[in-house]
Image (cartoon, rainbow, N blue to C red; front, side):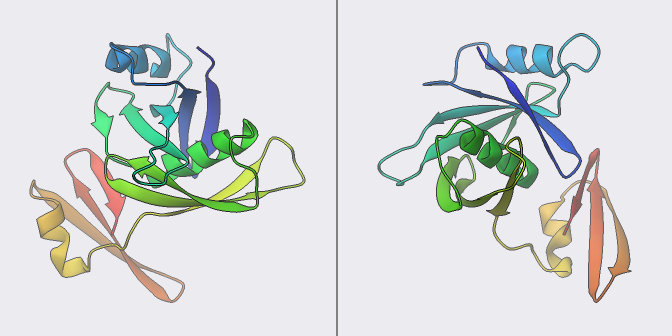
Length: 165
């Protein structure tokens, strides 16, 4: 198994490509993502073939460092786009669709002058308006509003998760 490590906006992921999700993939993710005894990463991304029915270039499967499955991660998708480009599975500049557990997502890649770097942008869908934060976070949550330039941003923390909404 060949793993590559990618960084996207403060997250790091290990990426590998295979035909299907192997048995024991949660255990594998826990082992390789361990920052003391493994390579260390926030998650393991499995790149699978795309599907004709969705007209996707590839399928994105994210297994978190604790072995749990995630539906999607914007930073993970950016890293996945870079991995696809660096393996010449897509050539840029390009925009293509990727299958995820949360549905089809679009990735745009742009080569740079640095052969080890590919800029990637991801369409992950719109965020819910602030009044719907409680619906998104049914557990106890805390809101931290602040102004960033011309935009008001609200961070919501539910249990151990923190997301900008």
